[in-house]
Length: 163
Length: 155
Image (cartoon, rainbow over all chains, first blue to last red; front, side):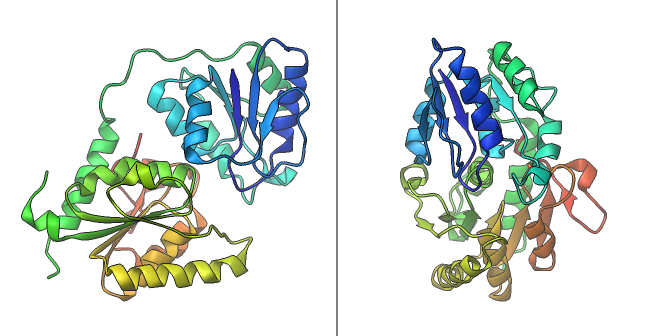
């Protein structure tokens, strides 16, 4: 199953219509779309506007491949479990976001082995035909940067008591 | 990680939905053993944070300026009632308000800009600067001598 998710704030018709079009020529593959506020009505996929965190989590776990806007929540969850992810960043010039930070975000994740970053509809379709692979070796424990950050935060909170 | 000092600290952890929330949850381990209260814009994460209490506020952003007013008032109410020693946010709008009100009421404030902002700091991140005791980016290349500082990140 492919799970497509575009967050809760803004429509992303370019992504959804492209995946739905692709699903039309791959009828043996289940595609489930969490479409947010998108206007496009998928015809070849199962679609739901908004879902709660637990339902979202269930769809995420059941999926073999995630297709997403460059939303940090989805990216972090895919990295946690090594799940294959195709990212298409929203572009401000096309009215898809308030600013172009998703382009910068996507740029930072291009070298991860379970992630493919696409810019155009054509690139998205070829990524769907040739998706990234799961990353199997589990990165046990917390990343070094997160250990550093949480240690620094704890120290900062506990130093020079304000009482 | 529990000790008497940490038990006394009241920590308000604030984030809106999506990546902001996921990042806040990843750093929450820093405050283990403290008295934690969460604020989010997501419904349905109560069980995820339990036994810590959670207050949900309606989401708003700069394209919905009118929605920012009730959000600000609700955050002010939460800060007045909980009286946190520390306020921590990973963004966006609700964290901005929590840090501003928290600072004015004497709390220690920590802003951690979302790792999504790899090219420049977020709008809320820029605006919250003078209210933040600790003002962090998660990208070393965005760090500057006067802040934002880099002290690690969620990845």
